Length: 518
Ligand code: NAD
Image (cartoon, rainbow, N blue to C red; front, side, top):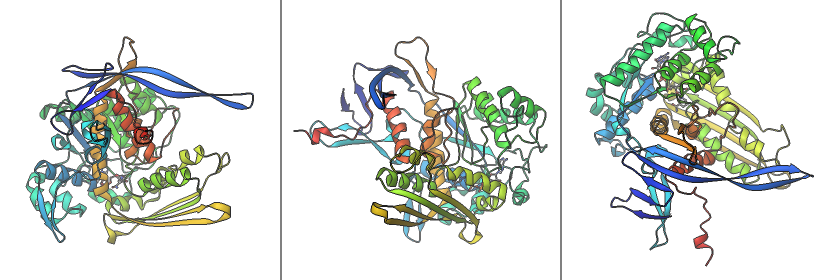
């Protein structure tokens, strides 16, 4: 394959018999190389295997809208102001000098991938991830959504206490005109301390088909009012308690629909939003830890070929953990305990000060090292696991500047110990907002990608559960029965290499033999 750079440094075409460009699509024939392992007579035998796939990516991105559930919250207001600031290329004064809008923290917008090696200089050619395939630009996203609090987005932005006053004054006029749609509020699912902001709610405090139909109409109206090709719905509302898994209620698609119709008390608002989105074929992403995607909900999405992604934004402490533990265990260091303390003072923290909602977060945060531990059978015996504790406390004074204190304790050579202690100030909403953007852009991309076994007749979509979003998520949802990958580097490689396969490029193997063999 030879690659040449076009006029703009970040645009490229792939010159290969395996890749064709038409006005409508980019089609690639891609050889996926894996290794089959079997065990016989006391030994493994490993056999390379090749599977040939075709991928087809629609080139027209179209007009994309995003509807946030919890639009008036800290994340909702921050991502909205951030997109306006970027769209208008705003600059503002801070006590540290002038600042300009950017998309730092977005892997799509602010990280690069190696396209290849320059034939003349021998140096790596890196391009922004956003240019690897035709993707929406966040500046073009149309934003709307729902909130149980009726404050307009400007007042909600003040309530959030995240952004500099100088920046707020520049976006205020536009945000005053943005008003969240009334939402569904089932008080049993979020903390009682949220009740005083619930002044923008539809009638009914349990699931109903009326609610599903109302939300479906909201999505359709938003789509037609803005002339959109695609709407993505994303839950950035409060963390709910776990829903109990009840046979006959939320176990199958039909039972779930029946249970909604019957107003069953174990159906969470987030699941009602997911069902409405599935029925409108709008990808639904869950940024909070609760089990929105009960088995019946996943089955419904599979039935309708709709996309789901979740759960829980991976923004601060867990992102560090999924990078650091990956490093330690892959370095052959035996991690023996992780103690994680958080305190935060925003409304998310207030909601999490209630035990049932904290429990959702605790579950989401606790499994993040399982795959890395299980993969190292030199350090850990079957079933052995490092101790792992997560504590979260509500501390109003620190506001949105969450503190995460972690101690990693490990066993090293000949019984020695390594202790790593970390103090991480996570400006919560400024870390989460770029993840919201990434989740939307990547989910939208995968609505335009299709695959088939090479030369088969019919094209198919990726599985309804978009595990390719895992890099941005703390407790990645994967198709039923498939493994969960938490390790940050692997998650990034999966995303980038799948995107590369869509343009017929090999996965990045980091071998750089060209610099080693001469
Ligand atoms: P927030 O409390 O500021 O915002 C949540 C908003 O949701 C509020 O405005 C609330 O009124 C609204 N809401 C509650 N129930 C609703 C419903 N049924 N329908 C519509 N709106 C509803 O919280 P935040 O800081 O913006 O975080 C949002 C969510 O993202 C939380 O669940 C949090 O745990 C999760 N999360 C955040 C981060 C991060 O900020 N770094 C990381 C991981 C997960």
